[in-house]
Length: 513
Image (cartoon, rainbow, N blue to C red; front, side):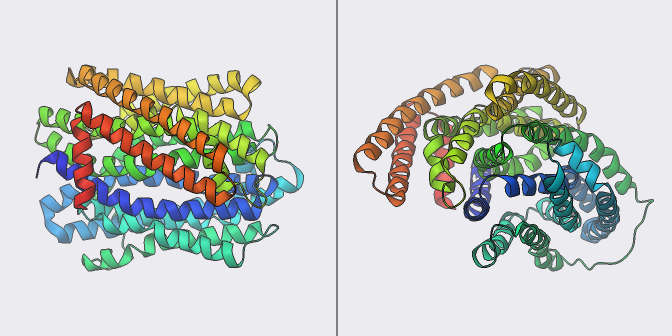
């Protein structure tokens, strides 16, 4: 099997599992919107969750990125026994650090909420602090989750990390269906804690099957422990600056009309569906291949793998962007508008989604390019690039928020993501020489042409049918699904006519899986 075929098939497997998890996640968001609406309680809950998870999400993602090559190197030099010993050492260290972070978070919670939501006062501020403290055990559970998934990915075991979203969402669904109710937002945060624990517990059987047995033992002199610390810091800073964009958006949105934070959160999750299902699957598979090619000093192979990954990402994200631009409002209305989530919340969320979608291509390509730099053991360039993204985002936020409100915050995020991605392409070209930008542009314009035709057909099909036959929410859902299916078929046919070779490999990979 070719490397491109291997990427397509492995990514398809991960994407299918992730898609199921995301479907359940959408049901979770729909129920949260229905039970709690888009206002005082949800704004407070989302800010409290951000305060609880932002640091550990950043640290955990950095750990996952740096531990994979270290685990591989340890196993190559000392065998599986040494690898398991290192796993135990790093797990104990992460446990100690997360306990410390949770304790600090408890005492610093009021300060953290003041920073994240300067517009919260009185009862809303007190509730945010309370929810933040309830959710602090999530920090510890996330630490275990990222260490376990890093170990399993290094062993090319992708199943357990891919399905951990299933039990996570089942906990939420159970709570929301049987226990959730407006006025019980503390219960939703408790459910979040229980759900977070399932993400590492679902990986425990696979870890034990590898022969791991936990021991309370930390070797601070382990050279690989020190190496992980050295490597993780630049990656963590680079990841942190991206999280800072989220914090800035929520902080500024907290001073706007009620529901602005929730609108940005729901819209961001709709946009992130594409990234988390498809783009993360591709980068998860491509990263070990890039690292291996770099270790063999095969720059041509690195360029080939990178080029295939970039083209596959364009094939997915360009039509997704056009689709969200055309169907933003009906998507939000069908998924979320029920119960306490009213038509005003739908309009606010749809506006945010439109402007977030403009940065989908840039944000997705940045994930791939960051992995390329990490495979070169260059963590400085992504870190500096991320800092530039934050600076640009702040400037644009202050400009756009004056006349666009929360939608301006979404537009600023998209522009900063796209601009800094272009800078990453230029930096990569300086580092490794010509990378085939002309081929990428040709592929991009072919895909854009096919996507535009698809978007026009979907627009007239959806709005034409709804104007004549719409009579219920279920009817609108069926018309939306029909329009999407027709659009996908039109897009695939046009891509085949335009001879975009990666589209055939993607289809073959999905069929084989």
